[in-house]
Image (cartoon, rainbow, N blue to C red; front, top):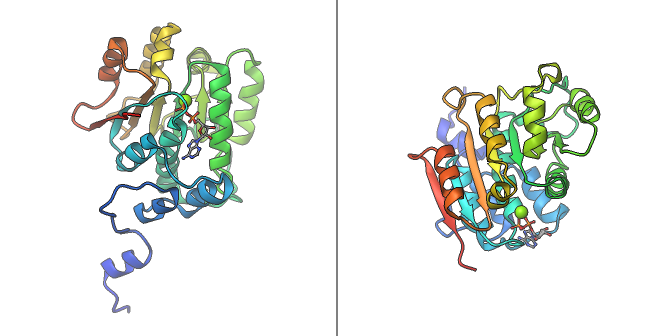
Length: 257
Ligand code: ADP
Ligand code: MG
C-alpha cells in the first residue's frame, strides 16, 4: 500500500493547484490555476501571447471557478480569449480524454458542450479561427454555424466530425435547434456565451436569443455557466443579462481602459 496521503497524492498530480494571491496577468501563470497544460501551451507557444489584457486578467480567473459573468470591455481588448479559456478548461475538466489530440471517438452532434453566439457571420468565423488555435493541441472539435452557408453542409460536417464547441449566429442556431431532422441538441451543454451582446440586440436578435434559451436544456439539470460579453452595457443589455445569469452566482467585470 502507499503511505502517501490522499492530499499529497492529489497535490502531486496537480489536482490541488495553489491559488496565487496576486491576480493573474500572464497566460503562463494559468498553469498555477490548474489550467490544462495543452491550453497554456497553445496560448503561449502556439498563439504567442504573453501578457493578458485587462479584461482577460479580470475575467478568466472568476470564470474558471464556474460563476456566471457579465463583462464589459471596449472593442479590440481581447474579449474572445477571456471567454474561450474558461470554457475550454471546463470542457477538458469534464472530458480529460479530450486533452489528447489523437483521441478517437464516435462523432455525435449531441457532443456540444459549449455554445458561443455571435451577432455576425464574420465575427463568428473570427471566433472560430481563434477557438481552433486554442484547440490545436487537444481533441476538442470546434464548428461554426452561420447564415449564408448551406445548412446541410454544416450539418454533415457536425455529424461526421462531431462538435464540442459551436460558434453560431442566432438565426442559424435557432434554425438548427428547431429542425428535428437536423438532430442538433445540446443535452450536455456546460457553457453558453453571448458575445457582443449590445450589437446582438441592435441587430434585433432578442427574439432568437429567447427562443434559443427555451430550446436549450434547463440549467437546473446541468450546472451550466452563462457568460455575457459586451463593449457597452445599455439598459436592454442589463435586462437581457438579468434574464440569463444566476443572480446568486455571477460576477460583473467592468474595465476602465
Ligand atoms: P474584442 O472581442 O474585445 O473586440 P478580440 O478578442 O477580437 O477583441 O481581440 C482583438 C485582437 O487582440 C485580436 O487580434 C487578438 O488576437 C488580440 N489579442 C487578444 N488578446 C491579446 C493579448 N493578451 N495580447 C496580445 N494580443 C491579444
Ligand atoms: Mg469580440
